Length: 169
Image (tube, rainbow, N blue to C red; front, side, top):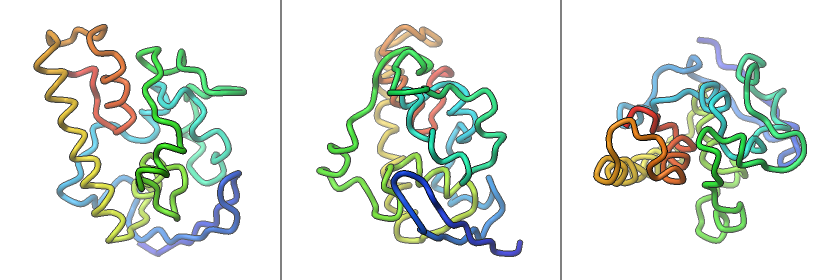
């Protein structure tokens, strides 16, 4: 694959550049096996529909076909489980979860990783964070009947935000 450089121009980044070195959706770290693609996540409804509304030029147009996106402010009803399940960006910053190249957090990292960007140190850090979310899968399995989607809706929605398909638990 020929490397391609992407220049970002959105509300949170102007002129940030990164290089895609892997084919989209392929050659993931063996420790990272997300169950949902960014396109699937956007279509299901994540982050109250507000997370990626100004990044459409950076990612494939097909990701936004059928995506549940808010027109104005975040709308938890757009989330698959219809509940708010996110921490504010200020909390993410305070806890040190934000990497300067991805000011929107984990999902932005995942979208760029999915597209083929590789940043070895940051990739390891984010994959480790993704793996730690597995504890929520365990809690849903322990406390809910299989397929009971009304059980632990906030936890299930949070799992969707991390590319775990909580509908299948």
